[in-house]
Length: 168
Image 1 (tube, rainbow, N blue to C red):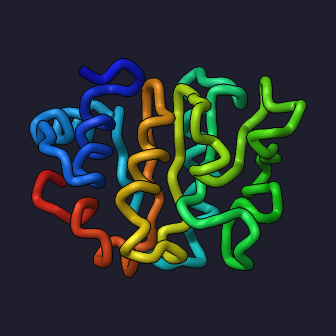
Image 2 (image 1 turned 45 degrees about the vertical axis):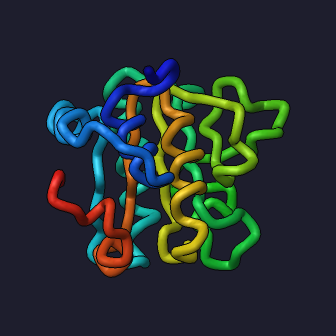
């Protein structure tokens, strides 16, 4: 029984590590907005879509301190959208920053392990090697207490059999 995240999010996370999962819970999470897969037209539009998802979450009465943007690749990679510490108008802090309370965290799935936020945005799929996908996605997804937004370019969606599978 999941103790941290909503059933649909936990079920998707379980699929990533090869566990049996409740696909009906995933469909329910997609239907009620707990789980949202945001498909971008290109890799260059991912950062803008992440900024828009942050704005939407803030519009749903979440605070900046309720949101984390997690890269499934790494902060230092040249193409990581969290590298600059800013997405659109939103300033990001690292998971280890003293100013973490009340701020939007932008860091890697691994540096955020052991932490949690009501809303998690998962991104940087274009930098993810297939062999690392399962564990990284499981860790990133299970940091969410209430909602997950997965922001992925269409070309990278095709490389992920779970995000492009029939329960969508």
